[in-house]
Length: 193
Image (cartoon, rainbow, N blue to C red; front, side, top):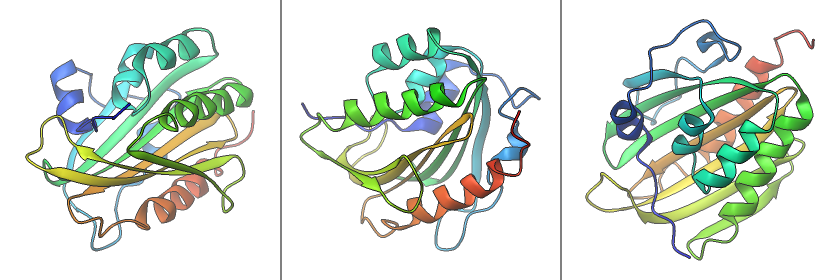
């Protein structure tokens, strides 16, 4: 199975997702700046309130993700996308749940599905407990050329975090791990309740 890589910014805009609001996965919990040399232009920040919206924004099988979210304590999600162009972008997704076990379950479904792709490498990531790093090589849906995307899925308390860096050269390969740690640190500032 070969995976096509979702150009998240364009997909979300086409799906008509609403602007940032004040739900459980507050936009304030998303990174606001990226380190250089990553893109500095925020293309969009979106609130995702329906399981299908979240499923469309992630690399895994949309049906499986929708089913997991629909049968969980899913509250909402936020996504922020920075772009340089259609083939060079960074995405951070924060999915909020009422229960930490549901965040871990979403991460498991995402990495299990991605590990089945012939153009995808998935490996446990020791730096963040329960997290996985993945690499996907393929054509974007909107882009003109093949890109290399590295990402991290991590359960942090009652949140599931995905960070994804995509470029045609793979030059940002280790940045997704750094972003996952930064996003995790932000989420850990939320009181556990």
